[in-house]
Image (tube, rainbow, N blue to C red):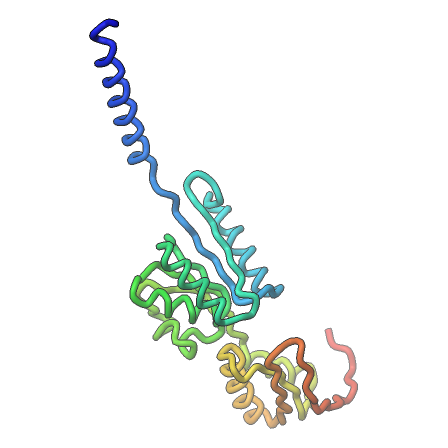
Amino acid sequence: MDIKTPFKIVSFIVVTTFFSSFLVAATPPLQTIAITQIADHPAANAVREGVLKALKDHGIEEGSQYRIIYENAQGNPVIAAQIAQKFVAAKSSILVPITTTSTQTMVKADSTHGLPMVFAAVTDPIAAGVVASLAHPGGYITGVTDAAPIEEQFKLFKKILPQLQTLGVIYNPGDNSSATPLKQAREMAKKLGITLVEATALKTGKRESVSWVRIPPHPPFF
């Protein structure tokens, strides 16, 4: 056998290994976008679809550069916490929690890591302990609130129905996204002389007694 042959084989292996290492080093790692929401709900689903569309519009979608992962907590806060811990442990490039509960668990899991986070559909980020200020959230967390314009809504109610005296409100007492608007609703009701009839609803599948109030008919408006 030609004595040069072993050297050729070794050289081939060395060169192949070198270029393989170079290609791996030259290929940037996938940027992981981790999205989660507390439950399967039309409003939350619409937010998630909007996020994905916005990313796609900017050329960011599942492929060679980006990896988009999504998990649903199925309405269970314990599962939401597990998902948050999993996404943080994986060192995701950016965290996108949707809804208040998912965002709160993500903030807690990410407290010592500081991974960038963009939340959505959080009614009151300050009361939920997500950020200290809406104007200047600071740090590594930012996002979008879905707070309803309670004052404007009440004024519209009165404009549509000037004789309105009683209004029914259904809310979840254990959720900041319900508690904060309810507080604002109470203030506006008092200011406008409207009596609120409040009823709690902890779960969508549980029925509770509600005192219905009949509102007198009114002429059509345009």
